[in-house]
Length: 137
Image (tube, rainbow, N blue to C red; front, side):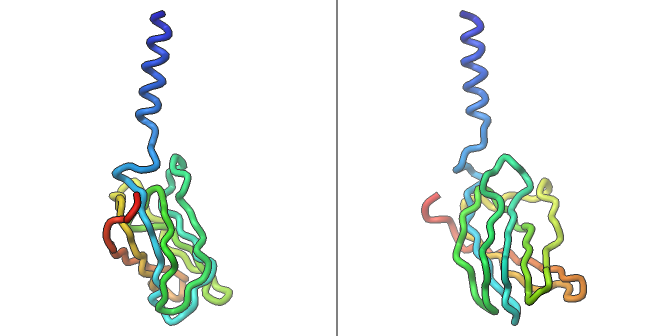
């Protein structure tokens, strides 16, 4: 009987410790704004390197100069992300952030404004703008 009680308590603790889909960490709705005079193609955003989160990478497709993508919901997101895209036949990406040192955004709608930081080395820059709380967490 004592074993059963211990097993039940351990199972309850495991369930309680599991990251839930809706927590103070997220979800976060993210869209991309192209702040260049080029067209971005094959935009992929990765919001965390933590494998515990199912929705941590998404491919938006293309966005023209000055335009926005639609929002996509991520389980968790930070003010920095791994973003890769192509302009013409050239691949660009952000510097890979140290996610463990960042503070998560939380249950907000966010725009990642993307510019080119270094044309020669094909490095992108992100400016994160909070748009407000998400409507349906």
